[in-house]
Length: 636
Image (cartoon, rainbow, N blue to C red):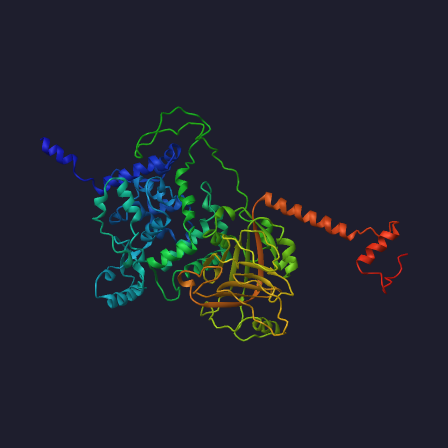
C-alpha cells in the first residue's frame, strides 16, 4: 500500500494539470485582486456551458471585443486566441477557451507574462507567429518538395484542408513558399513555452512536444492582412475604451485607406503579388527592425476582460483578502480605497486636433497608427500639432522656418508625391535631374504606386545649418508607402541639414553630407546623396529618396523586402511638419513667436525725426545711406 501511494505521489503531472498551475500562477502574479474579480465576472457573463464546462465561443468573443464585421477578421483572431489558450502545449491547440485558458490568453496579449516568464518581445513574437500559421504536412516530408508546391497550388483552387498550427484542420487554400534562411528563428522558437515549463519545474515535458518544425509553417498572406487592418484600427485604443468609438474608420475612403496601409506593411514581409505565405525569417527580421510595436493594440483590446461594467465601485463592501486560485475568485470586489477607480472614465481628447486634421493632406488616423508601430505611441496619440503644411502656408523654406523653427520638442516631417518619369517632361524636372548624379538605381517597385510617402522623426529642434549637419541618435528616416521601411540612425553625424543659397543644392537633406559653397569654376557639381537619404530641393517642388543596401551612411538600410538597391525621384504634392508635444510646448512656441514679433516691430520703429537731428544723421551714415558723395536726399 505504501509503495503504491508513493508511486502515485511521484507521477508526472499531466499537460492539463500543468496548464492549470500556470494559469493560477499567472492569475496570482499578473492580475490585481480587482482585475481578477472583474475577469471572473466578465467570463461568467459571457460563457456558454456544455457538459459542465464553461467556455467562450467565437461569436461571443467577437461580440464582446466589438470586432467589426467589415474586416472579416474574426475567424483568424479566434484561431490565434485558441492557439494561445493551449500555451505552453501547442499540441493541444486549438484549446477550448475555458476560464484558465482565457487567463493565459489575456496575460500573453497584455504583455504581463514578464512577471512569471523569462523571454522578451522576440520570443512573444514567435509565439504569435505560431498562433497564426498554417502547416502543410507535405512540407514536412523529405523528397516531396515539388509535389508539395504543386498540391499547394491546387489547394488554392480546390480549398483542400490544411493543418492549422500543426493540429487543427482549416480551409487554407494557399501554396507555401520556401525562401532561404527560414531556420534562423528555430533556436528561440519555443522560448516562452520552455520558460513556462521551467517555472513549473516540468522541463522534461517540453522534450515530448510534437509541434511541427517552424520552418514548415507559414502565415497566409490574406489572413495576416486582416490582422494588420485590425491592428491599425486598435492601435490608439485605451484599455477602457470601446472599439466602436472608431466605427467611422470602417466605411468609404477610410476603409480603403486602411486596406492600402495594410498592403504597404504587408509588402515589407512578402511580395504581395506572388507570395502566399509569410515565413519565420521574414517575420523575425521585419518586426524587430520596422514594426516593434505592431501588436501593442492587443494589450488594450484584451484588457477589456479586466474591466467589468457590472461593478459598482462606489459602494464599499466588506471582503476578506484574496488568496484563492483563479477558479474561485472572491464573490465581491475588493474594497481597498487604493483599488477603487471611477467607473466612467473622462472623455478622451481627439487623436489629432480637429482643425489640424481637417487641414492636413498627408497624416490621417490610419497613418498615425502606422507610425505608432515603430515610434512610441505616447508621443503620437493626442500629442501632435500641425506646425506647417505646404498646401496652406505655401511651399517655401521661409514659411517652413517661420512655423517650425520655434518648436522646441520632437517633430515629424512628412512628404508625399508621385514618381517622376524616367525622361524629364518639363524644364523644372530637367533642372532637378541635372542637379543629381545619373540615376543608376531602379525604382523601388516595378509598378507605379499611387502615392509615395516618406518622412523623418526629428528629436531635436530645427535650425538653419551652415557648415555641419544636426545629429541626434534618435533620428529616424522612414517610408510609409508603397512599402513600409524604417531606417534608424548610425554613428554618423550627417543626419539633417537645412540650407539656403548660396550653398550648393540648398533645401532639406537627411542622410547626406552637408552642402558646400558653390564651385568658383562655374562647373555644376551634382548633389552628394547618402546611401540611405532623403533630399528635398529648396523650392519644395521635387525630392529624391535613395536606398543603397550596402549602407555606410547616417541611416541603416531596410530589412526585409524593402531592402535592396533603389531610388525614388518624385514631385512633391504635400509637405507637412507635426510637432510632438502638448500645451507646454505649444505655449513655449507662442512665447517665442511673440518675442520675435516684438523685436521685428522695434526694428521697424527706428527713432527718426524725433528732434535729435545729429543722432539721426549719424545713424544714416553708419548705414551707408548718406555721407561721402551720397547726399541721401533731404532730411527735412
